[in-house]
Image (cartoon, rainbow over all chains, first blue to last red; front, side):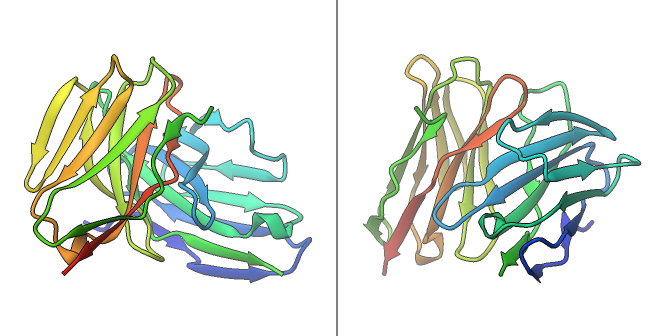
Length: 116
Length: 110
């Protein structure tokens, strides 16, 4: 069994360009989360899916950010018109929803975005 | 007020000692609590989860939860140099948004 995978691992882009990241969760996990982490900070929640439905989206999330999980398996996160402030590590996590409230999340290796 | 607060440290303990990491949270409706370990340049790794008041032990790690005080802690017994990392506290709030603290940097001195 493989863990959560993310692609690409690193992305350098110029300001104003669009970028898309992909996350493949652990196979049996039905919940998928996106986070952003900058240096010295904890991961910041962006959005999450249960199967293909996007159930929560951070009120801090700019309209330039959009996420999809079309078939309830992999997910993509797109950032349009990137800004230098978008430079961060983008983390994906997945969990198996169950009757218990635990919802343990397992993280992928992350995609490091640098906007020049 | 931040949803989750941790002392940023750094916290230094000698090898073999007990490291104590603390976290407070603001939303009384929070149900689940997690500790993650993050090595520099790596993604967070789940160590412990807890949702009932009291202690939960797993090997050298013990998580403690006090919902009345809105406090959760992590004890690491017999600390090893390989435990040197940043420890993140995470809380599952109502609505299933997860909030992380900024992390406590731990250094175990050989």
